Image 1 (spheres, rainbow, N blue to C red):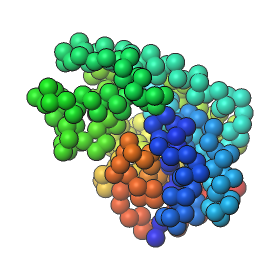
Image 2 (image 1 turned 45 degrees about the horizontal axis):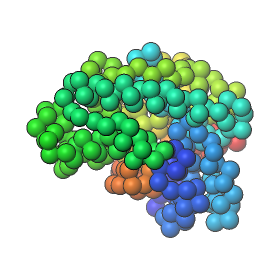
Image 3 (image 1 turned 30 degrees about the horizontal axis):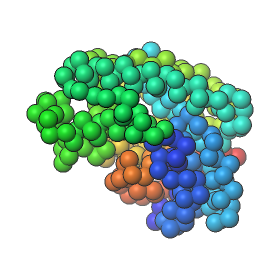
Image 4 (image 1 turned 90 degrees about the vertical axis):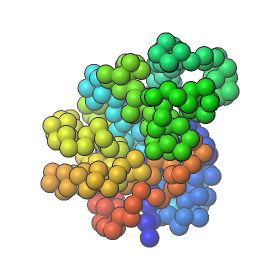
Length: 296
C-alpha cells in the first residue's frame, strides 16, 4: 500500500477545494504517512498543514509548485521541496504572478470569441469563480453548452470525450501551447532561475508531471539537468504507462530522484484521488526513502 503523496493542493491554490486541515483528514483516511503540500506559487497553507499533520502523526513536507518558463515558449511546472519557504521571494510570489494570470485570462477569452465565435461574459465568469481560477469555470461552461457541441477542436473535451477528465487541464496542455491560436505568452519566472532559488533556500527541485512535453525529448531533459534539477515526478495521474516507463528509465540512467504525486485538487479534478498515481508503484518504498534522504 502506498504510504505517501508528494503532490497535492489546498484551497490556497485557487483551484483546490480543501483546507490544509481537511487535507490531513483525507490523508489520515488514506493511511498516508508522508504528504507534501505543493500549492501553486504559494506557501500560505504550509505552516497550518505541518501543525495539523503533527497532531495526526503525518509528516508534512513543505513544497511549492512553481509556474515557470522552461524556454521562452514552453511553460513548465517545477516542484520545490524542503526549502526555506518563509523567504521574502516565496511569500510574495503568488500575488506577483496573479496579475500575469489575470491578464492572460482576458486575452484568452478574447481569442475564444474571435476563433470560435463564442459569446463569453468574462466579468460574470470571474464573479462566479469567486476568487478561484476562472479557467476551470470557463471551460466547463464552453464544453457543456450544446451550442458548441459541433466545434471540431472541442470534441475530445466534451462530456464523455476521451480527454474530458479533467477537460480544462487537458485542453490547456493540448490546445493552448506555443503554435496554437489560443496560445498566450505569460512572462513567468525562468525555470533555471527558480531551480537556483530553491537550491539557495536549501531545497531540492523536481520537474513536475513532464508527461507529453518532455516525452522522448532527451534534449529537453538534458537541458533540465543542466539547469540543476534533482529529480523528476515520474509517476503522475497525467501520465500514460509509457510515460512512466520512459521517465523512470531516464531518471535511473542519470541518477535523478524519482517522485510520485497525485496532483490532488478535489472537485475540479474529481477522478484524481489522494495517494493514487495512475498505476501501482511497485518500488514505492525505495522511491520514498531516497527522496527523504535527499531532504536531510
